[in-house]
Length: 158
Image (cartoon, rainbow, N blue to C red; front, side, top):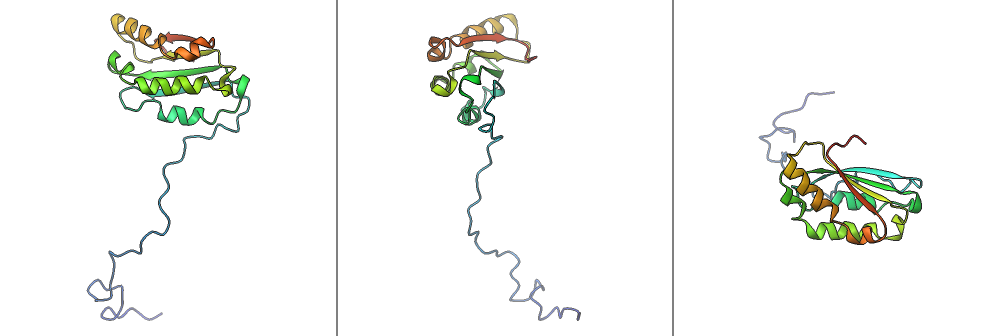
């Protein structure tokens, strides 16, 4: 193979035909990120443990995407929501997110749901713990009306 003539070769950056910064437009748009996991195939799914960051709004986007895939109907019994929050007020700052979650949990796919457990790995001070417990246990009124029990723990050792 003969060496490239730098004066005539298009690989020469000084050549008028060199076009190192021009790329043809992408004919296919870049897809968004994939869902974290496809749980639709888990027909006997009984429990889902999910971490929710309450200081990043909206809070339940990824959780709602996963719950939309649940197909286990009466097998799905328990949802564990591991809560990350810096201030208790973050737990109430997302009222529309709570409503969305409550609406999803009252669909027929969740007729077997018996409990929603809220937990945190951090050890909040006593006053923060009491306030967080009170706020969290008042959420999801429609799910509670269907008999879903809510509970709160300060260690997520599930």
